Length: 564
Ligand SMILES: [Zn+2]
Image (tube, rainbow, N blue to C red):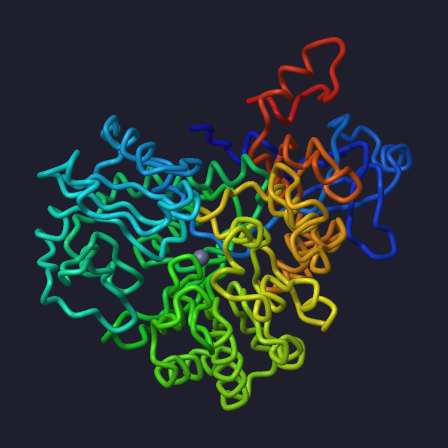
């Protein structure tokens, strides 16, 4: 893993970055040719010649062919989850049970936690037609009769386990469904091998925790992955206390490669609201707490007002009692925290809006900026309430394009009109913050920008886009990952734009996310990621190409900022 030592990258030096274009997102000067940074801040933006003349002797970094945009923020993601996904078995891209079992057969040692084989990313909706029911424990038992196996579904809201895992966890025919969870059962009432939402905890609580060293290695890999795709900030949606402690240590040592806006986990069954304190470090901020109100649509855990269209006896799951959530939210808001509520189904969203509205009014805080995470399926009458109540819609464009093949089966033609409705929310005046929910989706924000502009999959399907009236233009999409995410973290005065005086967080991309045809974003990449004026990541092509004569990206100056 590459470590960028802050000293070697000279945040205090004055540096001019010149690219094909600089998208500042400043309304009065949206385009420039270059920007100058010093001391971790943007000093100037403007024409390249005029800036060079105004800063004689400035070190110049040429980024030909590149577009510089404000640092990209992922407003909802899971850093520890990504780190784990990078090491355990990953079933992303598989399209059958056979493919998954094939991968499991040759699992490398890193995919074990203690004796348990652990994997993630299966999605029965991608399997051949006629085989899209939940998988069974027997399918795993054939290969793993004595090793316990735990494979999490792509959305993190269901797990596929074998008989040995159930045996070691003491889960059997007489085990009742826990509140907020469901044990899928066969005709005899035996657990069939899939556990939904809180039922997963029956097994997870019996699994060995990864070692501290394992967790540290995974988290470092996760942070490094983020800067390599151009992220300068991640809102971590559910940071547990060991992870928060690591972030705190690394931040005080200057070893965090990007900004982390940590949202603490707000609820553990039976536990009091912990006294959390708050943190404003160098790159680490902690002042938000997140709750799960319902599950996910793919595993039919999203709480709906009316039954699922494709399973009439299911209306989803609430993972916390609404009265308990309201009590906790009110207490936290009164103590100055921002409260974020995961709500996917329309019923969960109505409840979350009601609860956050009452809690904020009771707490009498001027600008609480509470957030609903996902805001995925909304009744039409709930859409304007986000703007009215000042509640942020924290949404994930790639969820729409991943879910579109089956979302309408779950919801029916009427409810689908308020699903993934980011344009309707924007038009209503709501604050939108965009993210990926990685590792549920890919961490690359260019894929999110593509999905927001097109509502299409990577093959360009469906033609014209799914529910195309919800498409955004390139700048609206970019704002979701920049100014919108900054606002959602109380940082709009410091980040999200490239304005003199603001933090020098930016990324040079190989594509222009605003004006290039959207299809180009799929093959685009981050060339250079700068956080607080320091190089957090550089693409290998930058240094290689700078040595060749026909270079597209060229680093000039007596001392390359990029050479280490
Ligand atoms: Zn999430």
